Image (cartoon, rainbow, N blue to C red; front, side):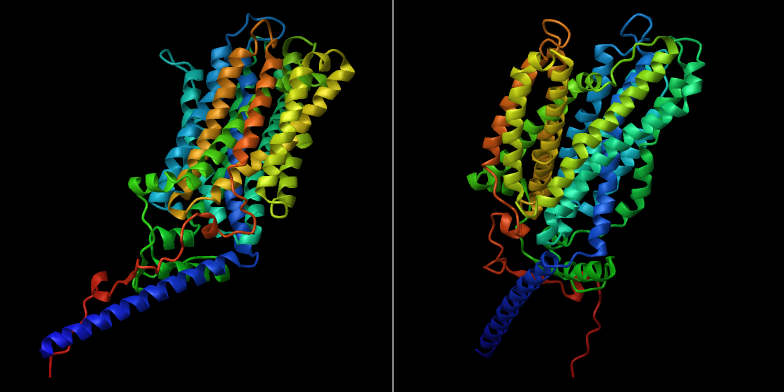
Length: 561
């Protein structure tokens, strides 16, 4: 009888101890999250923006540089036209292969790294994608041809591999900057990271211009237009320099701490997360103590069954549809708008020059570089920083809605008024203005917000995966634009179908308005509030404390008296 009473008393004490542990774990988790969400802007936040932004700078440089490098490749290796005063160029399939290989690789990388970052951790994957980008960029610069394979084929393979790394950067940088940011500055932190793309675009054009001017005498002294030997140096330098910013940022990426939310909600180690937060916010570094007591909260675990259960609820599925379709619709126009860059460059005096021979090669490459500098400064970069100024004031949803509405109107005017806008030099100036406005409101609009919102609206265990799915949907739109519309634009004659493509863009911008309505406003809300889940992990779930014996530490027992 006494034995039964003793066991009952011990059981009651154990339950009480477990309940206390549960309460303590939940209380510590909430306190730790509040510390992140209410943290003052610090050097660590700046460091996260710089480290993540360096990757996006590299991504944009590598993607954008090929638009100029493909012209250089055409002069050296092209087979697209007979040799004449303008030199040779890449044929349609070569040009398409070079330009679309990276978006295809990016799509794969976004899905793969998005999933892996939720499975093995943000820190463990961060830096691996940058290593892939560095290797891919450097390998392109060293590419050559042989009897069995052409240099264009080799470049396509390496650009696909590089694209996988670029794709991995999207979910990783978005989630790391989101999970480390305090609530009131989260939008600006994520926008600052994404805005590095604009500087990557501009830098690629600037480097191309510097290289072209530096090689001027060498180009002019090349044997002929069909043997521009020094142009072969130029594209290799332009592409190869893309690995430099990646190398600079690599150390900092490999040493960035794990996000406390991953540690708490996926590794379920509340104790370590609390220590990490304290170290990061005060000393800007994290330290793992292998001998510390491990406290595990019973947060929901990621699994295929749980994934289906979570997204089978319309309130969650509609958010994923909204983020994925908005990015898909936006990227169709964002990448497809590049089809009209030659018209704009011609209109502002930076089109194909009228000279001949090697002088033409030099002037054409210089014009392309300067023209793209103007386009980057005129529309791309200002749009990013208008988003930066207003995203935490207006909110994400109003900016995205405004962008899609204005882009719908702009593309309707550009498409249905296409012939009239190109009928005279003064009318062409109007087309240039509309083109710059389209670039501006893509970046002060859905191009920025489609990156930010998916990094905020999903629970920690699926945040990176869902961001990867959304980003991959966008990249699918880019592939549709580059492959599909590149084939359509010459129906009925050279560029005859472009006006109808612009009308198609207007339709997709219109659909973006409706997909945006599926999304919640994320301004001034914590990531936990946005997850659509009950955050009370102490309600019948429980927590555990690993005792020393469970951690492999032997305790010397005192002999009984």
